[in-house]
Length: 486
Ligand SMILES: Cc1ncc(COP(=O)(O)O)c(C=O)c1O
Image (cartoon, protein in one colour):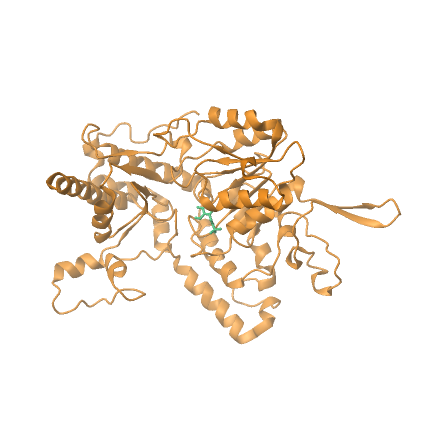
């Protein structure tokens, strides 16, 4: 893959690791203001045992320094797990609650002067914004159900094993839920577990999967494969796969391909329509900031979502559409409430809906989409490339011969999103994690040795990264010192 230019090539490590540099970067980037759209927890909020913001007045025995430290914003690099809460989420949810309490069932249908569509139309109202984030036509996307459930719904429609073509290819370190989903699809079709082919990294010391390796495994099994299911961005290593190239290769081999975009949506720009992806699914609680376990989303390419009528051999009218697991919410809105038991799917992704969606969830996702609408995903990506490179440069400023960690994420910016996965030397993780956490740093740990650090471009800052590295470096030094003593 070609490599994007290093924006900090002209700066020394010393220049970069300075308060002044981080502050200036933030001041010069117009997107820095989007941070104000979010509630950034303080260090005190994270520590205090109750829920909600920490009380502002400290107890009498605490000194001023401890109190001002508690008031400092935490360094939250965990948007790859759960995004922070947008300020407007509370406001939107209050409107939803007020609508429900004052209008009851009419909230489904009534246009209100609250700036939000009736619940019945909320799914449509989110299509434009969602489609822009994943490079799709509005009718190719829908906000529905949750990620693993959507993968199942999509596989029920797209995984059509035959006697000769029946294998599913995933990657060896797939997120466990995807692994279970694929295995259970095989079982559902009475196929043995060894029909699941896993692409494992050739080098046991590195999770990296080169394009050549991925394509060669697919080619090797092409004649017997029905489906490839891959992540856009690998959750553990942060590697961003070449969706366009791999999709094209699958299609050349007559294989259907679906993408799990949990770590890609809201993080990197993808072009699902243009790249001819068959289907994709994602969650809205990571970089999408919709809240824990909130409703997910899916994409079905235009060519798979068609609903056409024709004449059957006996002259009757018949509808032709891709078979799927259906529910009433996938049915045409005009006839949905007629209760006639004749399923007429909505053309496009909406026709894959099953149940009536949680308006509470849709409301929360809408709050986040309205923040994304203040910019565009390409501008966010440009900011993200700088943030992540800055983080990488600081992490690599520790001389290699004594550095107690290595970076698992590809160094090529085009092969990663916001996340950098740091593999610590054995035995350091618990101490480093406890130390940085007590200093207000939130990152995700994957035992035994990995920290996943993800500066989200919507709300993280260069200043966050500067402060993070200072705390992280000191935590590593302390962990090394105490490991030498023991
Ligand atoms: C890559 C990936 N796939 C699947 C899932 C499972 O998502 P859900 O629990 O929403 O089904 C996750 C959750 O974090 C994930 O990161």
